[in-house]
Image 1 (cartoon, each protein chain N blue to C red):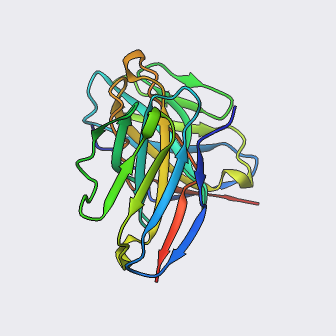
Image 2: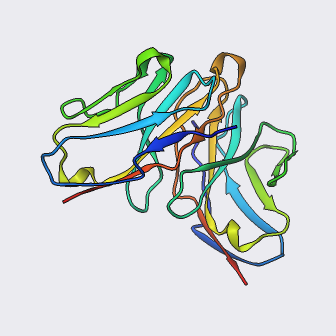
Length: 111
Length: 116
């Protein structure tokens, strides 16, 4: 699976949009971009995933660049409960292989 | 729909003692994973089951760790004997069949093990 690069930490004001970047310049054509988050003392929580089109669900939006070498996770109206470590993971779908977690981005939502 | 259930949530034991963790996956999920998460790091796979079969246990320390998934539903992960370095969070995850591309993994809350 392709390697990802994320900033180690970010801050965001409560109520504002949080934009979390991820670089995956070696991504292959059949690899999806997955986002998980882990709130302190909880298990990782699935957020969203996509291949090349932008995706949106009730939690977030995922914007993938046209060349697929980077993506951005957008939390439209961040709340204090969104404070967590956010992991960007690239993997082939349909393989059931393990998720390879990097260091992630610690997002802190400030009141 | 209930998520992945794990128990206990916390366990404190003396070194050299045995310990077991239990996981009940999301109903209908054929694939079950056990991950280990050390403090400040991301989870790392220990073992993956497809129904009853362990299809990837290459990262499971087999001298002291064992796992089983009888009847292809619940799973138990055991450590015997535990060592100080085993202190970590043990996470269970499950997913539907990868054959249909439905392999998004959903995690339980984890068991935090402290070995004294």
